[in-house]
Length: 233
Ligand SMILES: C[S@@+](CC[C@H](N)C(=O)[O-])C[C@H]1O[C@@H](n2cnc3c(N)ncnc32)[C@H](O)[C@@H]1O
Image (cartoon, rainbow, N blue to C red; front, side):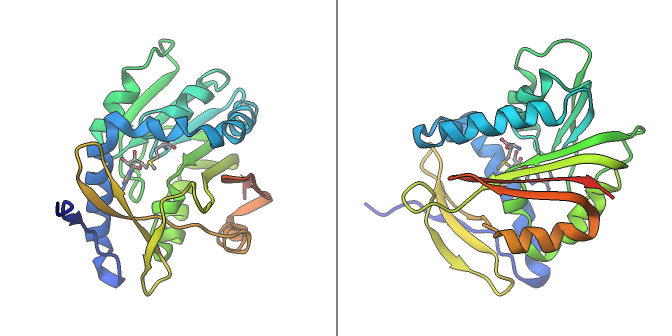
């Protein structure tokens, strides 16, 4: 039987707008099944380490979390952060997040494009994005970081978490574009197939992207994930 057609979002030069709408659509369709990715047995030890670190990192902070998806990490920060504004471009993923049992008053959700965040009318002393860096076209990383940082106070604690590429656990890469962005073919429960950009930066790349903005930058690698933490200059 022929496999289903692949939904492709091109990303080279000026075609990145097309890529951005493609990734939005992919995550809207994936919202209900998204958190299955956090159930992979081999990743549980690493996830526990990351959850523990994040809880400590944002203790007592006013946190802006962008591209929060279904709120997996929001749940983890909610235990200790003073307040959280968690944003995502997809109402579908936010609906899953909002349905979780939040303590009233401290946690808010809003629709926002991480590439053009609005004025939220308040400052934040912490910033976080989980598994978003890998979906930002390499040529747009500096723009994204500049916009994100502009919503945070100087001295804010900022963290990013994302995947390492692990043979046998990660979806194989099937191509690389002219900017060095890499792509996977992913299948959803409804059988639809999607070409999704997924980048796996190394330590040197993370350090050179973040160094202009960061004091006390620490980049760490577990078996399945990397984490970067710094104080915003
Ligand atoms: C890999 S998921 C990460 C979700 C969540 N942060 C986590 O770690 O579980 C990427 C998220 O980015 C969101 N997204 C895609 N394009 C976006 C954009 N331009 N602005 C904000 N969010 C976007 C998707 O809706 C999806 O929820």
